[in-house]
Amino acid sequence: MNLLLLVIALGLAGASPLSTTTKTPDYKVCQPHSRPWQVRLHGAGVTCSGALINEWWIVTSFECAPRPYENIASLGEHDITVEEGTEQHIDIDLVIRHGPYDSTRSPFHSLTMVRLASPARFNQFVQPIPLPSRCAQPGETCSVSGWGSTIPNQYEPDQHLKCITVPVVDDQTCMNTFPGYLHWSWYMICAGQANTDNCLNDRGGVMVCDGQLQGVQWFAFGCRNPAHASVHSKMCLYNNWIKSVMDANKPFTSTTPRATTRLQREI
Image 1 (tube, rainbow, N blue to C red):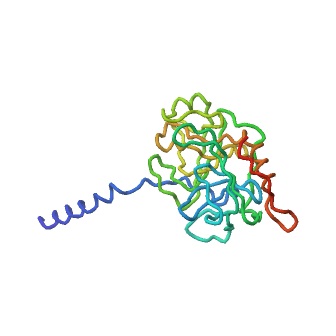
Image 2 (cartoon, one colour):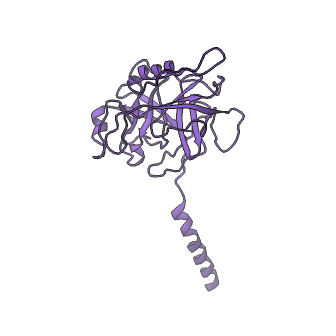
Image 3 (cartoon, rainbow, N blue to C red):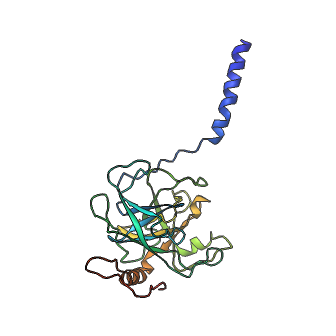
């Protein structure tokens, strides 16, 4: 009997370290290939998301900002640990960051345009997301997707694309939760609130409302405190800047010379 008790005690002792390190399961996996505009930007220490807006261009966050010919854009991804036969892996040719931006004091914008070295091939797994024709409104329900944890304070990337559903909240509600070292910007839109799934930790995570690109993740405040909204770039205010960047930097083709116009970096 004493021997049996000793064996049980040792078994419990051996199990306790595992119980303290086991992570909470993260079940919010997207239906595979239901977000054909989602792009994974990776390589050379970069791992983040972006949104494909046409066959040449991707929009992502300022913080993501991959480097030309050092990073790869992977389209048609779902499980990043295997080749599913749906992927297109394309070099990055040009990166244009929107300025000014000061991540330590007062961010005004958080947006980066990424041009592919060769055009994406559209099919059922790879499709662009339309730019917004209007601004999302408070109370509107949107979807956020990315390869990140949806569990607050658990920051490891995940192998499967994740999706959460969030409500847009008004600016004042979002400002009330801002940390003191940051300042509010008119170019921000916030989504998520208490008792909703408002955490998805992926730089450049994509927010889509009513079939249009309405946000690119800026600050994942909802992953620090589940009661707080996360902040995204308010994409409806950037249509003119995006168009000007694309017009000034048309990709080189056999019929179109590479643009030499000075890059327009401001709205």
